[in-house]
Amino acid sequence: MQSFDKWNELKKEISQKGSVYTKEGQIYYASLGHNIGFEQNGRGDKFMRPILIYKKFGKETILGIPLSSQVKEGRFYYTFSFQANKLSVALLSQIRLLDTRRLYSRLGRMKKDDFIKMKQKLNELIN
Image 1 (tube, rainbow, N blue to C red):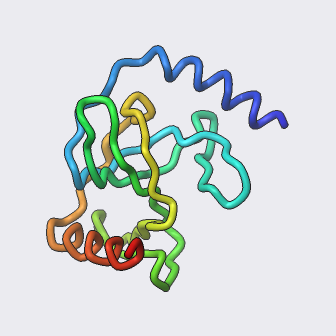
Image 2: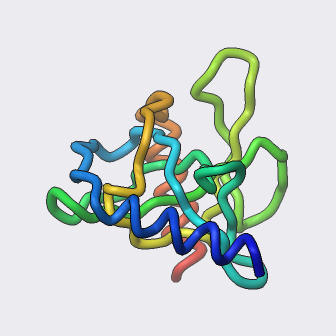
């Protein structure tokens, strides 16, 4: 229960921040919070997790895909690299709408060809 209480206090702080300018394909640390069941949580004091900006919906809202460093196979995952000698996995089934105030530091950008392939895989998953 304590993690939910900490997350609620942090949410109050996040709601006071300004929005962050983003572009599709960028990767940021985002404060995803302490969630329920199999929903992806953030880690640490700020409940952070890397996310990929999949789609922008104006200045304040994005569709984000949480990332993991644990390599997983299957239709729910897309493995790629945006940092030297390090694999990242897009957790396609965890895609979610986020306010840009949840975003902190920019980590990098997904390569264009990976972004196109991942979009195709996500479309197959949804359809």
